[in-house]
Length: 470
Image (cartoon, rainbow, N blue to C red; front, side, top):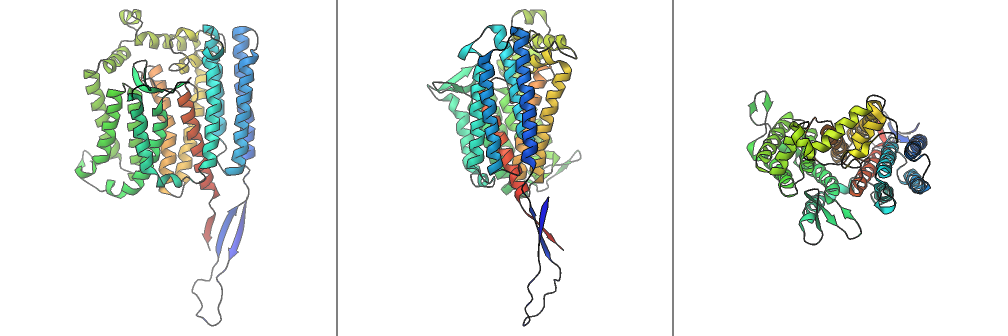
């Protein structure tokens, strides 16, 4: 629904008449009904998530634990509170982003609780309890972002600040006292009351920096260079940005021992520079650089080489019996095979056999109990989420918002591909977390902030009045 305001040019009897005799139509949008649609989708997502938690507890315990269920109800109240905030500060925002994130978050809590039950973990030792608490913090953080950032263009002014913040966050794990190594990766900090992975927030800061930088540098990066094998490559002098980001990604792999994050940061830059310039040669050049760097790292770094060896020899009995990386991967594959097409049923599988089933292998855990059908349904949710991010980006009228929307959507898409590809043995395991599903507080906070930024972007796009000259 829209309202048209027609303004005709004023006529001055003593002046020469203008040649324009038409009218300017300003199309103002009426209050959006999107929030009502979002509320309906939210209630459906909440019903599915709470039903999954109930079925898991009935299947594994033959009763419903009021503790976890009550905490989850508290989280639901916070999510509905965020919906109320959106009605006030983002009335024209996309109605699909928050419900999808809510459903994925609740499904993750349900499956993590299932693994806690199998392990006998209760109280704060249970990953499910901590996941609910971190989810609440993440939703509050997302609401705060919506209240503080009323226009996404403000972020463009602080693009270089975002770049320095990203670098500072990546350096934090190397500081004495607070720096922490988890599962061989030097990517964590100890805050005393909890551990946190600053690289999760760094990916958002990098997306803001890349979007702001590429808006100003797009013209120089689009200059035509030489044509090789059908691709027009840029000039040598313009290789600087991609080389700098490549060096940063390699440094993450070498010093933080985090292959997944290095791939994520570099892939993010490649997609955003392609969207900014429209030249596929940047993607070809970047792919060659990263594959070459990964090959050298696999040859020279033991832990990277071990991941590749475990990937290629997953079912080797000697390697499997050692309990190494292939033991985890092989058990995940066996779990997926056991689930088959329909799954074993919520609470009826054995996902706890696989190490880190609540975090790195949450996809395998859900695939075992929900089957291939349920897993495909989850992937469809991710696909819709990412497509909404791309739609929000391309619908924008400013280049910064367009690049930021695409970048934030691609961050989620690439994470899902890396995790699902590693679990299903398409690519080597990397250690990234599945957005919204896997256990991990820093990942939850970062991904809910991405939700808030996409909401803000979509509201800015829809709220702009349209000018129609007739």
